[in-house]
Image (cartoon, rainbow, N blue to C red; front, top):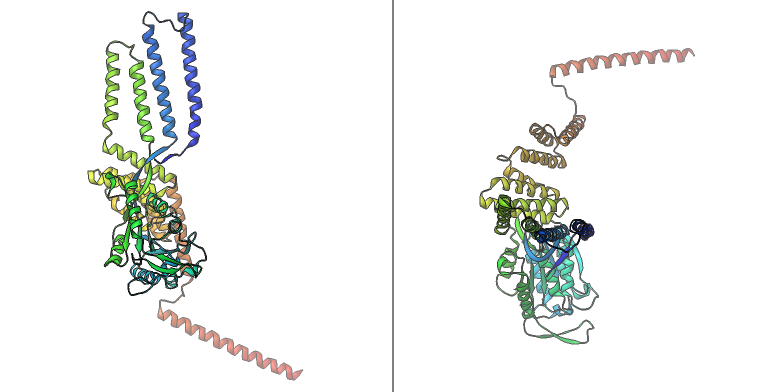
Length: 538
């Protein structure tokens, strides 16, 4: 079971909680001793009063403990969380061990040659996708970081060889870990890992690395090369002969155990997957590209395995124990008040055990998304907003859907996905409330300003101010956009060549210029004559 605590400093709150308990108990004992003379003497109904006090104190102390545990952010257990993605990113992991030089691939070529040809064919059909390349030998190394320039990846694929790395051994697990690190944190792109291998490893680290991928929500495709029949090859020393074969059986058993561990019956269709595909099977490449779904017009949704936060459970217990303190601690009240308190307590208990309304649950989910957004945990925020929007849309609750979609667009904006953010904003703008319209116009102005479209930014901020004229930030941004727009207009005007629009006026100016020029020429000739005369006289 995964167990974690987010805020360890919250446990310091147990200190004042214990002091408060000791203070209340000491005060009660002193008061009882002053009244009765003895602390534990019970008569004339004092037993009922004492029982009420101790019950009330106990339940409220337990309530305080539950509140502290909720603030600590305790998480245990796992669950799959939906995360919406835009774009695709694939890390190609190549096993370049000496066993890959065995010539048992179709056509009598080596496994590495088959990998080179197979990966090149896949690369030709991956337009619009970012790719990285990892060499799984030794500790594993990122040979080509994530890029959309396929030429560098092709150059590596064409020269795959065990000689590219001097490390010994085959560590497929380290290759998977390096591929996992090649993806940037908080990336908005859906990530995939493709491992090209004969499934032989020397350190048995593959299963633990695949578990990390499942927790991160990254699907892994293991593509097997070679024959199940064993063949002899030379080891790295060039002398020792070893037997090698495609070990697909061990990998399939490993995948089965991972599915039993991570995929429970309630989320069979949502958890990330690990798949084994034999490269020699007909249509294997098409199946791999289908998983990638490059032609999908809508953003993809992936699922990450995450620890389940239990603060909601502890808050529920805190409310339950607080109501119990009222129910058992106020039993000395007689008549209608006693019945009223009992009725209220029982109704509250029924409310807790029967659950909250779907809108209330969605509101809690939106609050979780806002908290994740404020902590810059944008992947979890996208998952919270997307799940809430889907639930509200299925239920027909447009108001909740508006807030969820707006939160989703705002998260995309923070991730730099401006097109996706604008698409989400336009989806709810027409029928949304003034508060959401203002926020959409404000954020759209921010996007336009970032893109250098200052005129559009000016229009957005003007519309936002018409909705909420008290927003100081909108006014400041409007002033900045107006200033940037005027400076750009001034720069454009300086680059223009001035031309006269009236041809007749232009002709008059040319004639006048000719007269002035002729007059100046005549004056210059006269000055030359005077100069010559003066020279001769001298």
